[in-house]
Amino acid sequence: MGTFDEQSCSFEADQGSHDSTAGTGRNVMLFGDSHAEQLIPPMQQLAAREGWNLRVETRSGCGVFGVSRDALQQDADRCVEWSEQEVRAIESDPTISTVVIVIRSDLVVGEPDPAPILSRLRDAGKQVIVFRDLPTVELFDAQGKRMTGPACLAAQESRDDACSWEAAQDLDWLTAAAHQLDIDVVDLQDLLCPDGTCHMITGDLVVYTDDNHFTGTFAKSLTGWLQRELVPLVK
Image (tube, rainbow, N blue to C red; front, side, top):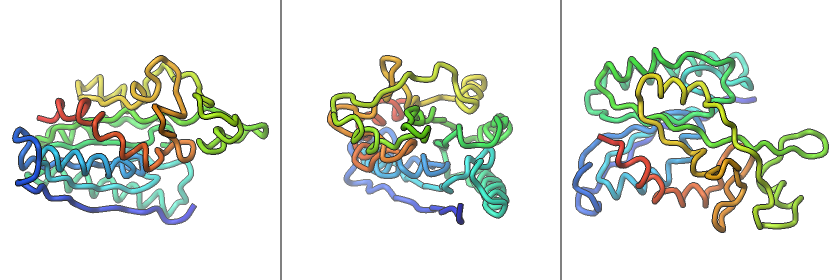
């Protein structure tokens, strides 16, 4: 694995064009790894609607609370450094009101305790919202390799719920910790696995581009869902 990408960007609210006055001027940060990064398009649209100033800080393959199984030592070292750097920056920035954390929890080595970082952010006066991550595809080809979304659909020769699998029943370590700390959770598994079965297609859209990321089209379609699930939580 090579050096992992870091994204740092901001989207200022156009105070004359948003649809809501309740969140005008609120500063919301999207913080995490590539699973946060894939939500930038719908979050940007949502921020414009709500009058939020949106900031984004992401590092692919870096789970904020721990390092990726796939990381080389230099990437693991940088992940630890970057995570602490960003947490300190959030703590010390009085303009940030809400921090939305999205990571791929099943790629992090072991099951780290996220409570110290979550508590630090909350103690700094930040509202923290955690996303329960989208489920990793649990379908495998004849060689035992985990299938990507397009590969599974091609193998099934059908677009009528061709690829589906049973949803995990247990909460991941981050979601469980958020519940224990009474931190709000937005649940992507509820969206993708509403009947206890996870689907490669929702409506007429292909959900997965690989085995753990949304297609761009599906990600962009999430603005309305985020409006219903996330906006009521943001204080």
